[in-house]
Length: 453
Ligand code: ADQ
View 1 (cartoon, protein in one colour):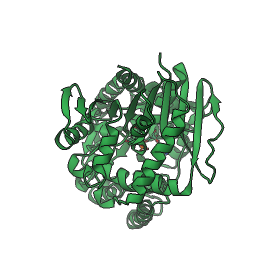
View 2: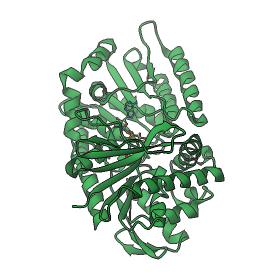
View 3: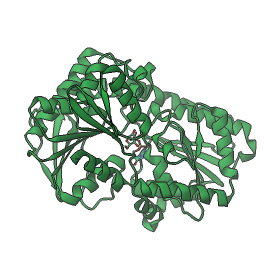
View 4: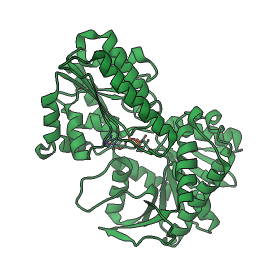
């Protein structure tokens, strides 16, 4: 069995004995716990030190981190990764910016990662990189003569060539991506979009089964929808010790709770969701005094202007909507700019009769899966899910909506509250079945097997 070397922008702050973290971290940790291995990434610190930090051992996993300089952070992280790639890969081309110096900084940090990782690896190690921060990482490793199998899993969407080509250096990025042996995507749509670019615009020849011959090498692609630990989520949701906050919440509520949980990000469709809730309150007054919409959205990437703008706007909108509809004894919208630990969050999911997950685009969206997994199968709530979340491919038994359609979303909220128990149970059972099949274990095992093969 080859040793696994995981490389991601950040290394999760793991401690032995603590509850497992979300998505990426949980999957990676499982993979590393089994046979041991290395996890490498940025420490999250911006310093003037160029020395790597001391290695840290957590069980069989060795964690290696480096710091970034201010210039690296600005050009790589705030710049090309989150100012160019993130918006464009989420189809938000109007929000994308481009700067040649930032792309140079992005490549420089990918090279820095490669030089650091090269010192740690043995010839038969399997190298598994994650996400849009590392599109040029395999290219940098190859330049150092590394011959290992190297794979990348992209957690976010990959758009069609028409959108991707708005990034001025698109051809160079694609050429670099093709230095990976395996590129994993969340959905068939993302895989097809990538192959479309490579075949029609980079001279690639399809070899069948997702493989393509391009730039004098063979690149495999595959679809690996990321999942959650279904039983673990339900157990966390039910555990009495975890339920204190949920019980307090329930005591302050009227009958119906709609919950949303997101990082505060423009791709998550919060602005459109607030507008749809206002529409719901306007068009369905029978629910007045009986319903609460609770949006949990801790700020993220708050030193980037587009993120400051969405935060300002939502604060204004929350106040305005409450001002328009609230009564002395009823506040229709609760907006919380804070994060909750998972053991508190899972019982909150279980408390909500409906969950609104309405991103404008999302690679997968694990909140949708966690919400379903947290429900009591005898009395499940209803998931209202954007057709543009990767999760919609699997969770077809959700109420699938178009996040741009305010009236449609408002009607879905009404439908969710009015839905008979039997229908809720049927929809829930169908979603749990797919989620058990596409488990986190399966995601990890299939990717690793394909990278090895
Ligand atoms: P994210 O964009 O961060 O992830 P998502 O998958 O919804 O989005 O969430 C990841 C984890 O963060 C979940 O486990 C969730 O519980 C947790 N989380 C989110 N908001 C939270 C909050 N307000 N408080 C506490 N915890 C919160 C990226 C991609 C997704 C993809 C994942 C995994 O953008 O499309 O599903 O990676 O591949």
